[in-house]
Amino acid sequence: MSGNSNSTVGKLMDRIFPVMPDFFRMMCEQCDVAVQSTATFLQFMETGSEEALNEIRRLEKEADELKNRNIDALYKAFATPMDREDILGAIQSLDYVINYTKITAREMGALDFDSDKYILEMAVLLKEGVEALQRGYAKLGSNPALADEDATFARNAERKMEQTYRRALVHLYDRDTNLKLLAQKSDATAADAMSMALDIFRTREIYRDMYGAADKLLEASRVLHDIVVKIA
Image 1: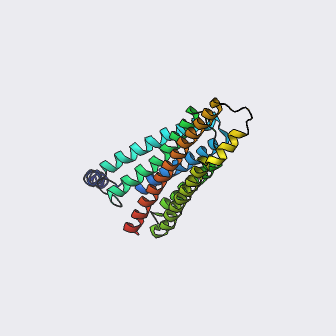
Image 2: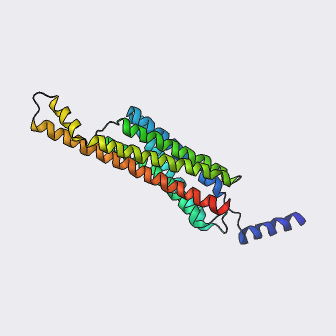
Image 3: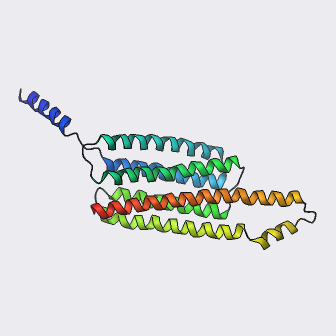
């Protein structure tokens, strides 16, 4: 009788005060998918393989499912371990980074474009920045104060991506270099000049995508930093 009574009371209490979802674990799961996505993205940049591109698409779908599940849990939660807007910001900012891996890879395929040294450098930095976020979110549940160094690492990775992006633009639009390349063709035609111009435009689009990924990495690092400030 006592056991049944306790079970009934327990069920009643669970209905009145539902068990709080493990949001720390949820955010860590999103970080894990983000790390897989950026690692596969780097592999695609290095090899251009169709297998890597398909895996990027699969991971982006998996990330969307995680995001939707986590947002649904957030909306239904009676209580949260931190401000709801911070949890939502973490969920969304991590998903934005993953989205950019798919956007960039898809555009590279559509434009029939191979990566260059600048894009590879930015892809490495993006992966390192997301790995830092993964380390930081893993610390929130036990020692949140230490997570700020990881947020700083991710922010620095974004700054390095921006620096690489600007170096890439300077090289891309270097008039003398482009004229020399064109002059190397002794019988260069207007069609050759047009082809070079189109290559510059295509490259610029991919650089812009990588810059967008860097911006989302910065946003994600700021969200982590804000959480640390509030709960550490």
